[in-house]
Length: 410
Image 1 (cartoon, rainbow, N blue to C red):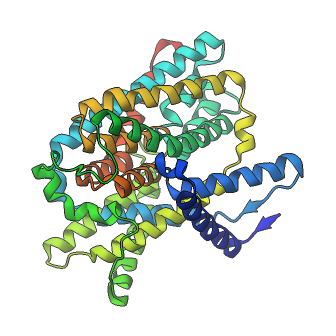
Image 2 (cartoon, rainbow, N blue to C red):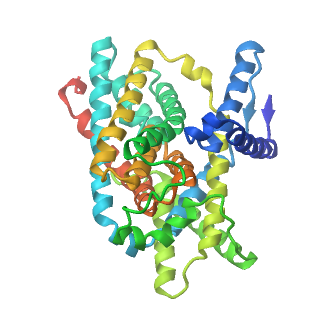
């Protein structure tokens, strides 16, 4: 059964409404702060899995809107990035980047070690490590092709996509429970003044910039002119970013398209600010949150869960171990290194999102936490830039360093 682009948009909208109703109706989902797109998307994915398994019916959605929505989301992150605020939060951003790189290394060590212990090619350990988890679907598919063409690993791309799908699901599920556990450690509860002891200069300066994504359910007053102006900036970012990505393709400086889009949007926003024409923050917030919600709904409702069921036991075992590693790392490393306060709780939830899944999942995790427990301007300042920009560069370097090891030279 093929669903066209309009039917796909209708289905994604219904998934979001379903997620909203499920979170409102089920105390367990609220208690564990599961994001609404994740709740609705997983139900849809399970229904489709049931149709595939028991009725031999496969539903194919038109994914043509998914990439533009993802790129629009990253463009709004860039338009929302104030370089002065990023400079103020520089020390925390640098510290968080060190924490993130530490996880990249550990993911690959665990993956390779378990691959050896289970008697499979260690390249599968890299695929079940930072390649597909912190890297996501795009990075996983790209490296899977390299592993097949240059290392002779068959079905590497399919394994990478399956691993990334597993990570996307678990990243969206685990962020809330990890945050809940850490909040109990802090002795905080819903409605408490969670920001009372975490206001810093960087936090205060980043407050305005972070609001776009920190309060997704807040009303965003805007005008038609501001909305169209923002759409124009997003369109320019997408067009120029994709052009830059095509120029860099095949070179040592190759970057994913979304990183180039984000970079162009940062330049546009800060250039306009210097010229005395700042972007319309409310319009950026509105478009950004709508793009994020629809993208996540489409990504999750189109998951081929039967691909996960087809994972070989050794690879699945590696992924289970990586999930445990992510939880422990977020609770005992990310949380402690980032200050062991409320901001660190939100950062840990976000780290679960993109350490296993993707940047949109990280933002959704943090939104679910801050919607219940209060703002964390610092987290919404630091995570988008690290998860959407720096991690891809760091991950590429880490993967290449591991591939230089003697075990991969034969």
